[in-house]
Length: 152
Image 1: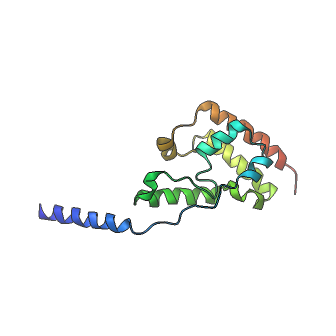
Image 2: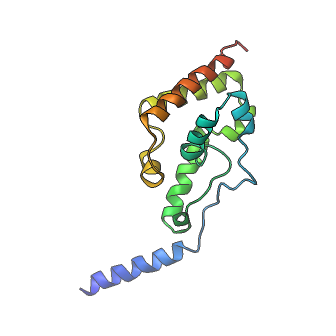
Image 3: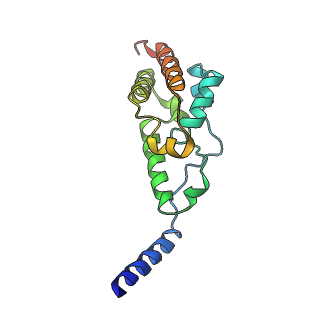
């Protein structure tokens, strides 16, 4: 029984020490998505879907829930955000070439169609995206891709 107690105390100490180290937050001054929304003709309905399901991990500004302050959850959330921004960051939209913009929108369609986005872990905590919302995003993204079919 003493070994179990020692292990639990050690785990508690590690957990407390983890609270002292915080991963860097995705905290730009504001969520700069205007260029993306303007260029891709985001409607108010699509904007709501994107705000509720995409921008927290795919822009330079994340609205963090309270539990993001508690390690080890803070590390896990930070990892998800970094990976999301690595794959697609709407705040960097103007830096992308037309070919890359087309590719990013194509990936968005593919990920939504396959049910890979939004991540299950995100929808468990923030609510699910409906099939109608998924279809609206797919239709919008395919239409937006038409702007980038021009050969550079």
